[in-house]
Image (cartoon, rainbow over all chains, first blue to last red; front, top):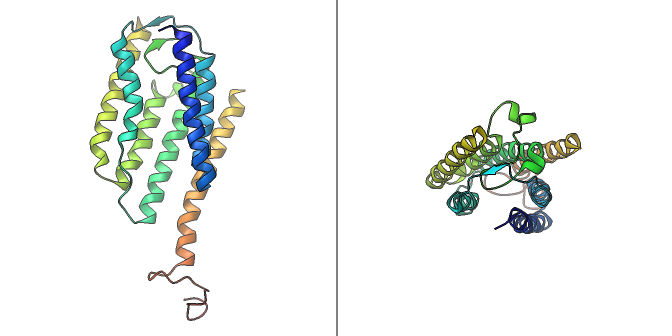
Length: 176
Length: 48
């Protein structure tokens, strides 16, 4: 599949996520959903106008793993605690993680992609402090979901394993 | 441009946090442990 076509499909997917997030903001009034809309619209624009690959993994397997990894968070179970305090702490942890991954996305800009590929190395902004701020942000964000339901720990391990695998793969591609 | 986008992201995140914290403190201020709202017709008076 050509890079432009996959970028276009990815852009549509992100835009539909943004629409769902906006609907949830409209019905609940929770501002966090507005942050998700902002992130999804930005990701959609970046995917549509992204840079051409300098080098990619040349493998459908890695692309599939990357997209599957992105979908893993939908397996998290909803909260089973009645404690408002725990729910709020979980929300704040999720916001902090989500903010970090959004800042990483802004920094990546047109170099953003889902499957591992070299679209130019970024070492500014949050990338000055860590090589994978987006994955770190997701990891922090998903940590909040364990607080509201400990069974989510199993999904968390699966999700983190995929992030580690993807970051290792990206590192190898960027080093070559 | 990046600076503007980052500022919007940080502002939305801060507002989200304030809203999350406010929802807890509002709940604490308006409900007693048995669920009777303070200042409502069911309460025994102010401060309960």
